Image (cartoon, rainbow, N blue to C red; front, top):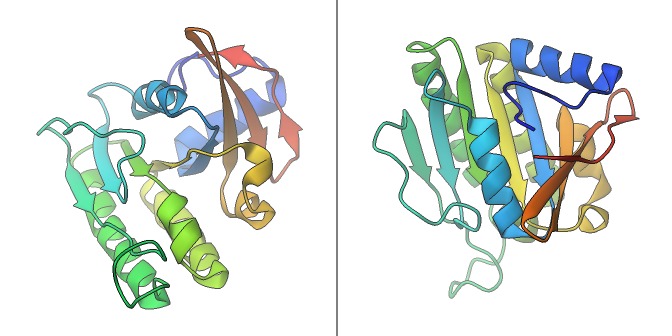
Length: 203
């Protein structure tokens, strides 16, 4: 089921997603299977009617080179405790610089198209290496930029939903949980603000 064409049939969810596409916002995509994330990412990016921006921190979901037709590709490897460096935590300044780069790319893309779709691959290094207040501030800032530019940003987080820090759900407009079953991928949408949750449907 494609984000662009047929959102889940639950009335409240459908209304919420229609508002998200119209006004802009952010989506957190969770689930352990990276193949499910890749499948969902293709759906969320939509077709060539949208300008695409890619933000890469570890390429867990989309390791291949993206099309040269992308409006922007932001490469930003994130230092974590496992990196060979004396730096064990990424500072708030780093996330501020990253949000500034994302804003610049999104505003430039918005000048050339009516709709911008952003893939952030992935949040895992930030969760592992950024202080929680800085991370929440970063997600809030990106959501504000998305709403201001009418863009939709989806953040990939290859992890089970119950392993995601609960506070992160409040920093996005929608949460999509993915579940791979055989060759099929299923999705369940949740809107944190209203508390509405869809049924599981196949992508």
